[in-house]
Length: 297
Image (cartoon, rainbow, N blue to C red; front, side, top):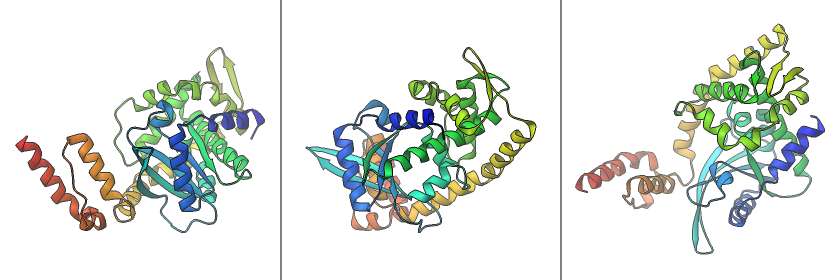
């Protein structure tokens, strides 16, 4: 990793977050015994506290679960305001492997080439390791972008090709043009990032104004595309496995679903002990009650 990319990543991780976000992150991280907490998503960009805050908690030690991350939902009243968070927990070593493209996962490097902030850390010795991991995500994403993108084009052309491909590989529905919105709302973050990541990867490229042209050999391009083909095949099955796991291990799933339903329909959902313990079994009855309430107006 070159120094320029590391500095760029470090500066990005220092992005200011609302004090309430930092306080919530500290509370969650300390309860989980985490090494660090990363904050990401639209609330990082807007600085707002509405909706659900997104955190990744990086844990010391080895990964104990084969299907990761473990996801949970939390609410916390802070200074008279209820904050909500969706938290993903993952061992730091597993996070590094995924960021560097060493696992079958396609989500970590695609997610963390986008903006994130290091909002809590247990000790300073973790900081350079986290900077290196996020830089690894940028390099993994940039390498694939070079192989998927045009022979020459703007940086946005390469990022657009990358995000279009990764969204298609995941088990979720995104509106057409989602990749354009990512680039437009995070323009400052992505400006100049691609050539820095290519340099760190040792990928030669030509530059003519705003146009870039990576000089990949035919053999290197085939190697990268073969690497991607294997991960693309596993993308949807792996995401489906995570959804199935989350249906039984998503801590706070009932409260999260109740909040989402009330927010989008205006119909409050009472959380009973049975619904808290069995959110999947309770779902049909809850949805029927919501449907009936909306029909009654």
